[in-house]
Image (cartoon, rainbow, N blue to C red; front, side, top):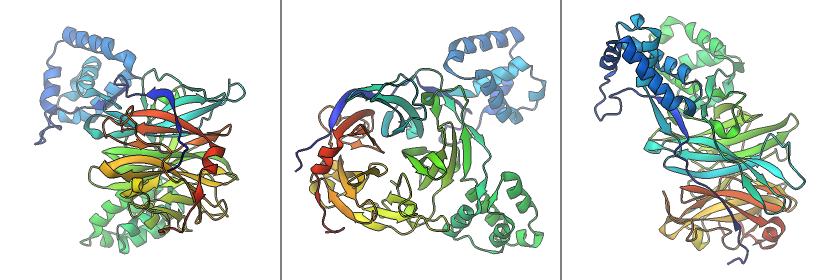
Length: 493
């Protein structure tokens, strides 16, 4: 076993039940047998007199307004979503409409159950620092009621030396506003191919679409499909599949005056309805400049799908699906730059082995090359990455996770060749971090897990989830870590 271990820092982020958003609430929809009670509720609100309506609304704003952004706008929006349920909705006063919106709203604590699986990248704002400091953005997997996951953020400052300061996270949260996006035809082609959806309808649609297109162009193409195609037995089903595949790409933005820690990337598409999990952020740099990229797992309650996001400022995000055999399963981590002109990523397509996949000319991730499989006793169940590779003079440093007896997770490390990442140069003979008595208990016991770290001032820093409940921070001198590694046998050896 190796003699080097990461040092835990005395800073811990714990779930904060005060961090809440407002969601639509429709009485009856949460029952085992769905039977909406919306019409009856709207009618009961409509029969309240003006005095009672005003009093209830003032009381509601007194209790909740300071906890949320634009509660009036939210109530208006929720009223618009349910007003079709009541025949007399048009006759309601503005005050009554707001009150209806209030009755169809509820608070949801985004991290009431757990806070885990963080990654760390340089923050877009590096002003106001002293020598030896780096401001970082920490992404967080937030888990609330019903085990629904969303992506949140925290801000921290590393240095000088081993100092670490995590900023408080006060203020009302902001859920991003969905925007239209310029879709990519190649992703639609790849998505339909994965669904084995290839017929005259899809061929006609794809032939009419340009390489990049907006929603209006997409709808115009669908609207001009020949009736004799749509009248075929598979026509309407194909059309539904084309719409569903196209909707996997979207954009979301946050108010300019919102702080990073106030922003919540909330599930937006059906594929994400049960969660956006394990975001692995990286600051990607090429000739066009730096951009934040990440991969995450979309979960609909039954199946998973891999998604990518991109942002230049961590305020506006574009989400797109990842296609191809290399994008199957969880745990994809993008390289921070191209290598020999290739876009590369770590993956675990078979569920238990770390592989290397490359993006082809059709924006599909190719079948992976195996790098490292279950070998040591602490990782015999499965192995995977703990975030994007980190470029060092010695090679690409990859933090790994392994699963051992009693489903105990631990963190290790690999070193890949800087120019040929298909070649594993060295590995750490043992674990860098494993659950101890301070962090073994929680929502999912005996787990330490990271989604990405970075090197600052000669020190490797990485945040980690402790038993899927809280987030800790650890560091280790980079030179000492590299020196502790030993030459690796070939993959599978």
